[in-house]
Image (cartoon, rainbow, N blue to C red):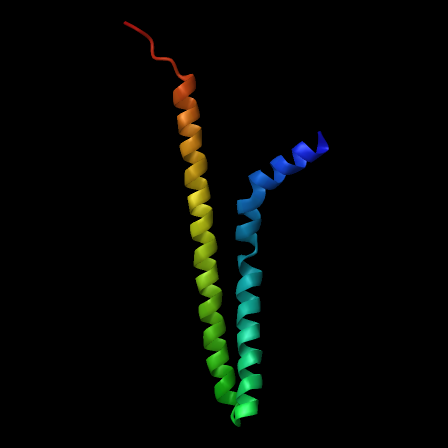
Length: 97
């Protein structure tokens, strides 16, 4: 019984957790890009330019992942709404005049 409730909770709240992780994903992508670019730039002789390029790549990667997460949640919400509509149409019996 507990396992069934846990599975139901996971299934219902996957979208919520996916959207809640957007902020952390964006921040981590920017930090990894910045420090990775700074490190690579330092190895190549100019850490400042490397940090700018890494920051730009991190921002790009973070926003791409944000848009993917939002698109996934939109698809999930549309699928759930479609299932609700089909369920309500199946249970609704039209009256004969």
